[in-house]
Image 1: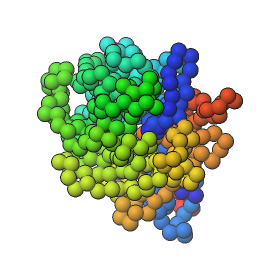
Image 2: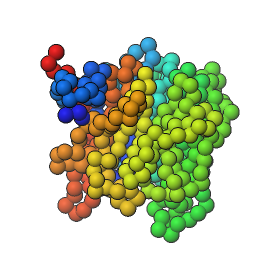
Image 3: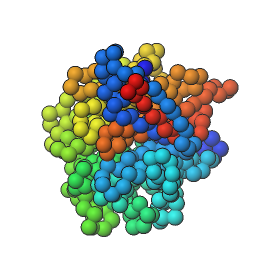
Image 4: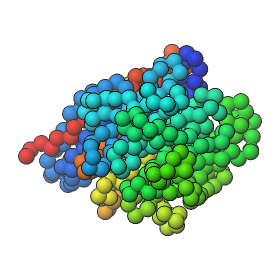
Length: 397
């Protein structure tokens, strides 16, 4: 067999999750050899593929796998305080060894810290940091980026500095760096000024947090200091009543992103546009399902993304995010053939597969996922994050 969003409120003793696709909590490492991908998309007569999972660690989060020649490290965030749910930024080898906290002793504000993106030089990591305007709620988490700034740090924990500052209740989400290291893109949110009674005292400014988003780009120059590292900031695409989330910037400047219209409370389809925000085309078209985190493989023959489509009972926009479960899918771009890669949700627990990253040779994927269990008093409880090594072995050779 081939195989945004949690909603929670952070208080001093608990965290209830269920809405914004868990670009959060737990890491699952999935190694997919090219032989597996070929077999998965081949005729039924092809050799079988076995899945051999192995747990690596119980603590992980959003991640990025370095794709240059300097090393093969994975940058990721992980929870360091079960009460506050504060996170720090780490690096490790793909097998979970040599785990090192990058930000623990660095002059970086404590709180939500993470959502990493490697700079192509292999030394610097771009990441989000919760700032002083934050009341430390769901919406300030790395999954939303409201009241988050963008920082940079070297992988040895030195030279940490803020490179982009957000105003109160503005957002900076999911920064991505171009393969040449010269361009940075990220999703940004500007308060809309439209107070919704049902959101009053629950969301930043009482607004619908799914509105007011845009995609911005800037020139990144590591030779400069502080916020001067990013210049020529410009808005590429915006809609005051929509949600945008950046996923990838390719070598030709093309940008892969998710977009949801009219403030609907889910992540809809996946799109691609050129560097000038033209030639917009839909890569994944399934308006009733949650589709997010579209990433092309290094050779661009495949595109992977997470989706809720395996659960036919979950139908947007009526279904609630607290009931969401997601899996990883891969589409062959030549003919659009789609295969579900993971099966986290076959057991008794609900899982959210989320952020992931291809290996530099396109033979592996690293992905985070989080298990949940139902509470006796209602709702769901997030269990300890997991890291798994799942090898796909082609049999019969």
